Image (cartoon, rainbow, N blue to C red; front, side, top):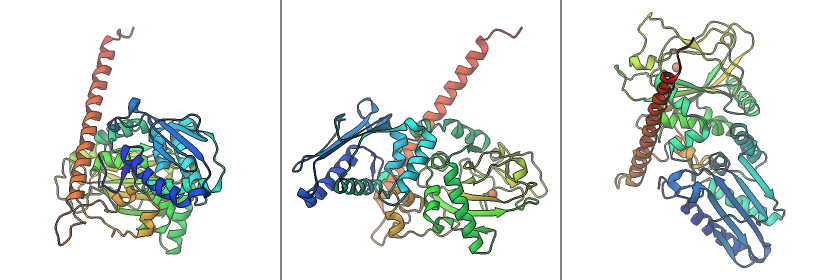
Length: 433
Ligand SMILES: [Fe+2]
């Protein structure tokens, strides 16, 4: 088990138990107001550690007016049948706000954008208002407890991000192209401009606290996979900042993001930044420039030192993630218009943040546990009290990071296998005529 006691993995045995407790209490309370209904779901490629038959996560729920059944198994005759891909559907299973206008539609759009239209299929319908209300409450109740798939290797494969994890090791950076929909990119861009302009500035920190769209983008599951792969679980938001800039010379010179970290830099990564593009980035846009592999120098650039870099070119809605003290700078912008960026900067969990982290009950209530993890809610250091250490969170963090390290080792072992297979293939090819 890779959760704290108040959390659970999607469609694990614990998830079913918590669902059953909730639904029993709610059905009892509603009694005869609730007409009979049934729903069943089945999702493929669930993480192997859940030990589900054929890695197929199933459950069925039925109410006959007096008795409630919550159990494993898929009932194709249920009033509503839902089928799809486990990792894809996890995005919506973690979305709180089933009845809030537009929230689920937006989550579905992001899920289908990345995983394809076929990642979720529904057959049948539930029309009764009382049943819809009950199912919505159940969905949100569980979404507040549902964690990300803790198996980093399985998750990264399902998300198609193994190549990026490899590039992060070799080059110190990787790009996730079109990680979000153009519509969501436009929304975050507009909200960022509004926040920046209202403060009469060109850059702003603490963006997490400027609107729910920032809560969503900071939890983007694709970027978080790269963060988990480089900084380990329990990494915290160091700063969530934004920059608005127009044409002209780049304003940020060659540097690393390791401020006040002594040289030589550690062999492992301490900090990483994901820069979101809300317009298409070309060299003329004044993108971030990165020096591939410079993290291996384990030092910052010396005064006056130059380096060969590459401009990060990517479409709107993409994110470039760089970490581990890789060298970078802000490019010159030669085209008109403004470049708006959001900088999602994370630190390994043992480090302090650049911005003060603040949580309130409403923010936690409208989000899954992942946002709490990002804000240090699972941090055993910060939860120490006069009566002693928080051994529950201590053990959880150790356990989760051990599992994450094992997954990373499997990813690396497969790279070596793939490399050897490629070499064999090259050796077996006849020489070119
Ligand atoms: Fe930087």
